Image (cartoon, rainbow, N blue to C red):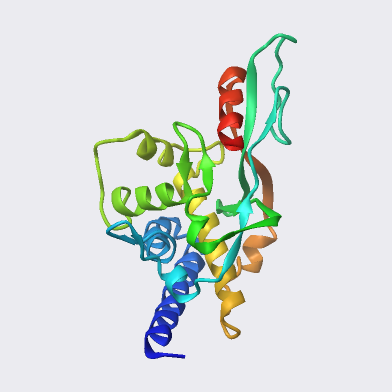
Length: 237
């Protein structure tokens, strides 16, 4: 292994350890640490230099592949945790984002990515995976960079773009969308760390917290049927 490769892998390991330590702090109740995690995720998955992919994970492990995110499910009547009561010709639709959220008695809310285990994408392209289509199509890259560059990861932007408003909007669990998205991506990063480095030890939710699980749910988006049709058309293309 040449010196450059060793250097890249060493730095990848350190970034993953930073994410692991910050995620452990989140599990212990320091939920604001998701902002620090966002800047490390930016380095790992979506750094660019003059439109060239400069993401650390890709540079260090260019052949690595990651499971694709599950496409958004759609229902006129409800998801596993929400029901819609409407006439037969009603046009409301629930679109389920590729995230499951778990709420514990301590108040900790954890996001989990829902992946399609049978389909993989090169790590170079993982940041282009779509997370949500509201308020517009947002990719993994845009979510990470919005939090890292504008939402307190490395900078605070008070202009209130649509993306920033969504990511700091509270979900039904009282955690913000941005917090849930970043924690879910951090959990993915920690899993990648354990896969790449034999002695990498992922942090775990403390037992006393884990045993107080109170609620699990899919993260939903309620919209009009015509709009949902447009979203699905975008997925197909």
